Length: 270
Image 1 (cartoon, rainbow, N blue to C red):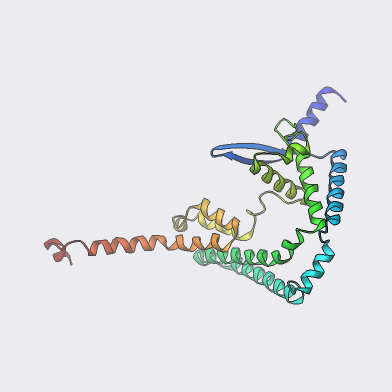
Image 2: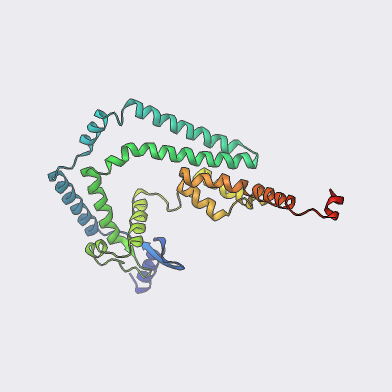
């Protein structure tokens, strides 16, 4: 292979990496890239996985099967849990369908907010199981495997490793970099795009409707998108308040006119 071909292959490899950005301080953003792990990286990640699992098991941490039995015994999960979860997912699907079929812009916006709330309810309900499961031998081992791979595959623009070793990753002082990198690598390993939240149906509808002139003054687009991505009760509620805000301002202005001392011109106009 010629030198030119090698350089071309390297360039193509670098250009094909997934990129993500981290805001280190206000106004300062740094770019990071996710490269392909080597065979040795994968072996070392598996080794860290095995060590963590065995250590957790030795220390008395529950396995997944043991945790499932405990949750069932305490009636945290079971048939009722499964049925309620199914009902929430059906409700979410119905809300999405109603939102997609609605043609009135105001009602469609309201349905988008409702979908966001329902999706958050599904997430919170699933936490009854996924929360405890995070503290099992298997999940602790999986977490350390992802962290090791994160330390190995996160790169600078020139293709060099951002962390020279796993120890460097573990003592990273910029926690925002470590957290964001781990999240991005986890999505990459699962084959999920970084902007998967933006592709949720309700978020797409929000963006489309916020581009419409009569709705664009209700609330800043960036704030609405941030609230929908959070998809929480507290994060969605302000959207409705901001939609009513223009009316409240108009009411206060009318009230202000009433308390002005009456003068002859005003009386005549009345």
